[in-house]
Image 1 (tube, rainbow, N blue to C red):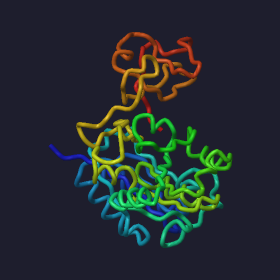
Image 2 (cartoon, helix red, strand yellow):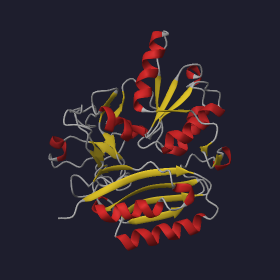
Image 3 (cartoon, rainbow, N blue to C red):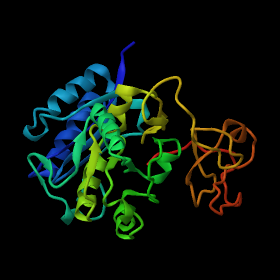
Image 4 (cartoon, rainbow, N blue to C red):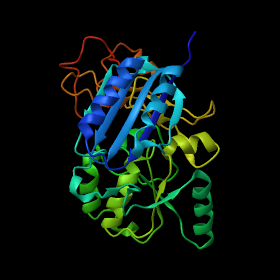
Length: 311
């Protein structure tokens, strides 16, 4: 039986003709039988694709032939084409949709004006060094708030965001101004969101800003559940989440009964469909799984629980 894998990568680099890159990437993936999501913009590429291992390897080799993509940091994980509903390749104004395409500057070296990159090992050194100085490193979650419900760095600040578009309003609200003089480490799944976020933070007066290079994925590969991370990692495909070891802590809580769980389900109210945590007992209860945000069973799908959809 053929092996299957999923790859995740991004690259910030000027792309003179995003539409041409989009067509090339779609043709390449279709020819190799790959599915997933690829975003191309004038500032680079962000991709998560899966399929048979040999096909994925050929895809990575071909993608690296594009001059600006030679140095992409490719992260591999279990899974395959079946974990995505289809192949989606789109051109967008921003590689990460913060809603401010004019604020970001990208050249052949990547995002300009961002925070210092930290390897997982360097992150631990920074935490120890600042602690010796009597200062605590603040972890700043660069993901949507619901993702942090099942996994985050211990003690992390989790902004009140439903989408990436919400971040700049959060930063401009003043609620995080007290952090402007503290060492701040941003993190996200693979690194792409927090790379942009560090530039926006620095433009808004945050002075000591770092980003976890390679994101939570690279950190988990290095330290598993023996470091500063706790819980599961939310992913935007049919897997929904992944753990770095069999000893991963379950930090999520069922919206109905508060039992530990890491399983998201869509609110059964078809007008809502909010991703909500429910435990196996509540899923098996036969009652509609409605979220706690004021939804009712009226208008709910006749099945108690709908399969969760990501993104």
